[in-house]
Image 1: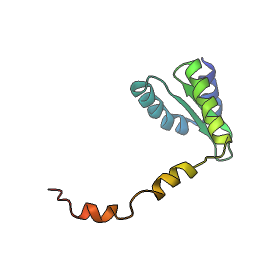
Image 2: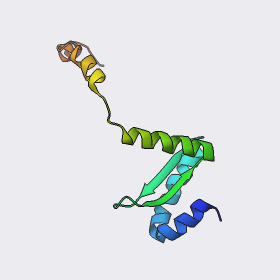
Image 3: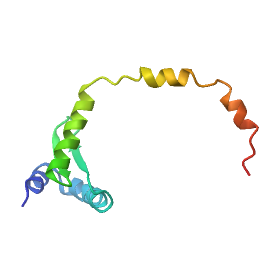
Length: 97
């Protein structure tokens, strides 16, 4: 039994495990590299899994770094402010048949 399987059996109920199994199967079948963490409403780790150790470590580390820093959206907002305000009027003239 792997560490993640042991964690799953201890922390997830049978119903929760049954709900998670198809999601993990989908990730494994459709994405070569992935990491997933399942948290409780209280923020406790219930389950984690990844495609391989290096990928899991990188994805979790990057996610924690992103969550720990403030997002600076000022540059993106400046770009939208420069966008022409009459763009909606231009679309009305186009024919979408």
